[in-house]
Amino acid sequence: MPHCHGKTAMELALSRRNLQDMNREVVKADSATTRIPEVDFEIPPYTQKGSLSTIEGLIDRAVAGLEQDQQLRNATAPAVAVKIDEFIDKLKKLKEGGFTLVIDDPSGNSFVENPFAPQKDEALSVSHYKRTPQQDAQLGIKAEDEEKPSNDIDCMRNEVLTFNTNCPECNAPASTNMKIVQIPHFKEVIIMATNCDDCGHRTNEVKSGGATEELGTKITLHLTNVSDMSRDLLKSETCSILIPELEFELGMAAVGGKFTTLEGLLKDIKDLIVSKNPFTCGDSSTSDRTEKLKLFGEKIDKIMAGEMDVHIVLDDPAGNSYLQNVYAPDPDPEMTTEKYTRTFEQNEDLGLNDMKTEGYQE
Image (cartoon, rainbow, N blue to C red; front, side, top):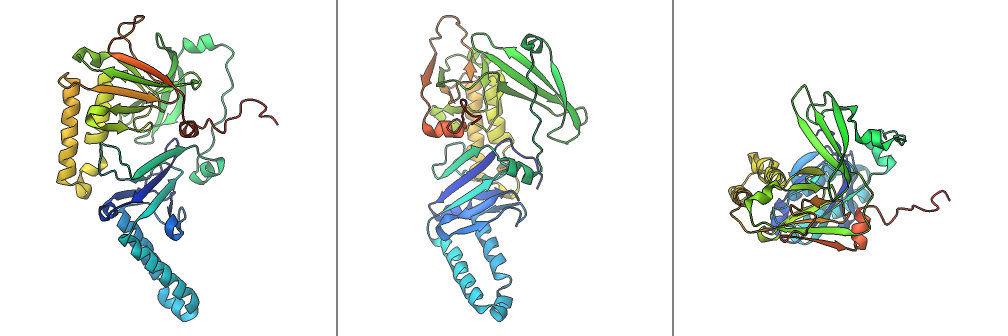
């Protein structure tokens, strides 16, 4: 399995409620730890190769691994063999009742299928966290040297900085351009763009140029005209997207940070959910799932054509997302912006609860 490490670590937790959950597809990277707390079962990282399987397949694979040397144990350590037989029975009985499957992956590359996509899966929770230096070392990631602060911010605003990197597609040497841009009536952002001369792959990413705001921001736009598709939009990496009329919710890290238009964001959502979905082709594909996602793509097309009356909601706990007000500096009659106090869980996701900005030298 390719070692293309995500920017944050990931923990997936699924509460198995019915027999159909056993058929959920699972991508488990070799760096992931797999746990079933109810039976004190754990598969440490790097003890198994990465795999594409189902939840039932994961359990069957674990059972097969434990049964492999039972004949030898019966001859050399019968007491140990009896205990392992008892534990194997516990694993097999998991198929009959409820349990929780936890996949903790520092590389951020593991995945558990959401059969209700594009709707939210109530039984599945995904949390992202910052890797520790020890986890970075295990993954072979070298910590980047801290950049020395510039004494001339005005010069940085007026020039494009270039640094060497590798193409995320073919891993060939490439260069990334970085520019600080001021968005009118909002704030500064950092736009980073990579263009690979070898394979032609292009990518762009937006980072907020400022600190996390004191309050979260929730922007709601009522789409009433196809001209709304040309509104400029900044979606930070901490922003979730909701379309209530479609019962659709996209988590904060799914698309990454982007500076685009509303039409560009909807095209990205369609590509992510429909066109580039790895579970819509090959053995993973089912006619019911393919039809459901096709219908969702048709609804997105109708929204972009102005044929559906919907609301677009940008919910950013960090307060660093933006949607253009075409009536600025006057209020926009079709758009509302709500400031709210973050919950403890949202501060935890943003890494703010443990952040110490005063007296940290002590």
